[in-house]
Image (cartoon, rainbow, N blue to C red; front, side, top):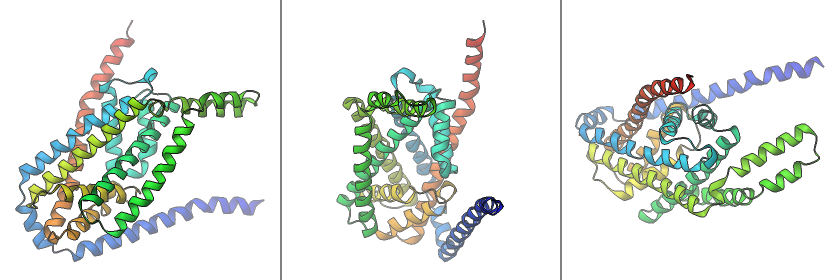
Length: 332
């Protein structure tokens, strides 16, 4: 009996070892790639950048934030829907977590919806599930638009086909599940207490998939996803102007589409390295000189980071104000 216990205890260190090894390999390849860049020309490109346009890009990036707030408001069940201001806090926290440590995105976002959004756990899980669905639909639409506007690389076209298939299955499964709450509750009748509670939680999750049962609400949520994507494309074009690349809708859509695919897997903190490599490859594919492509990648990532800091600044103001209001409500 002692041997299995020892084996189980040894498993977590083994997984950590592979995790550390993977990070070391990523750091090695990132270092080699960075060493190969013409840094003198990149620094010259950064020095010659129009930084007022980079600042404008931050505001353009923030312009997409209200669409996200409203989208999550509409995704929340009507009976538990937070105010716009409270959902702004939730999205700011989620955005900061995804920018710095994307591997914690799911847990962090659902946790913020529960703690700050004051949603029941089942409602928070339903909201995030439908959010991932509409986000995936937005990614597929962006990839398809990129394929129409420019002759995209084979890997991007393959990614479009794979993601389209996954999203079709995911959409169909959720549409079927969204109408099964009552059937699940009938299934739970007669079960022992623990399985019955589990079935009840799943039924609550299904009941909260409201946008999948209401076509008008679902359409509004998808349109808000497209609005967020449009803000991203406009921000990329603003960065293009900042570094001296001729602004192009096609190039901006290609960059956004490629980033949608490349950043799906949380490989590194803030997608550092992967983000820059993806943007550089896109611009190189379109014939942009390497120094300008690298400068665009660095400024693009920097704009997103600064925008996340601005949202954290909003939190620094909103959270104390909200706490004061809550204390006043709690007073007799």
